[in-house]
Structures are given as C-alpha cells and as structure tokens.
Length: 136
Image 1: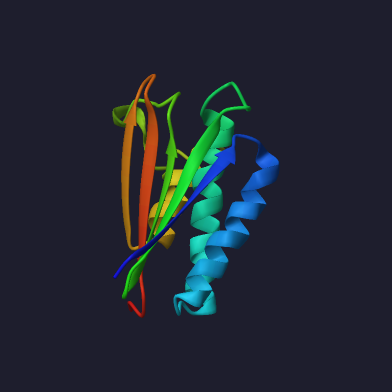
Image 2: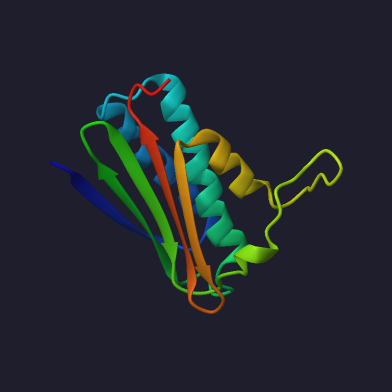
C-alpha cells in the first residue's frame, strides 16, 4: 500500500525549509537512514529552489510537493504550473564548463536513485525523484 501526502506551497523562499523538514520527517518515519534522509532533504531543497528562483514571476502562486511512501521507496514530485524551460538546452556542468548556476538538477540526479524531469515552456515543470530503501 502506498500513502500519498501533498503540500500546496506558496512560491516564496521562506517555505522551502518547511517542506524540507516535512519530507525528511516522512523519510525518517519510512525507515530511511540518516544519510539517505540528508540526501532527500538536499534534493527536495534544490527542486523547490528551482521553482522559486526559476519558476513563476508571481510569488503568490503555489506549487505542489507530493510524497508517495511505498514499501521500499519514497517518491517525491515537485510540480509548478508555469514557467518551464527547454530541457534540450540543459547541460551538465563539467570541468571544462563549470557553472555557478544550474547545479540543482545535477545535484538532484547525484543524490536520488531515479529522477524524471518534464518541462514545457509556459506550462511548467515536474521533477519526480525516487529514493529506494536500503539500496546500496
């Protein structure tokens, strides 16, 4: 059985910490160890920061954070309904091309077991992140 919790979050930076704490508490209750919980917290913070910094210009709009807690995994989706970007233009940072910005997606992919990103200009972005319990 899967439990699903959803949060509607104002697009303001001061609420990122609240979501971070809520998701880390859920991961802890689901049995993730402290290292996995820390990875999840950082990934969620990065995904939410992407919405707040690169999403809608109207900070009064809300975005959604959905957490699915399954038997062997947690799935977190961060969804905004405006903005969006062209995924074909995203480039991973390299030693030859280090970037100050744009590291969020790179960090999320490094910390989570699975990451799916769907984005369409003017429609929004959805980042789905999965972390498996006791995965080596």
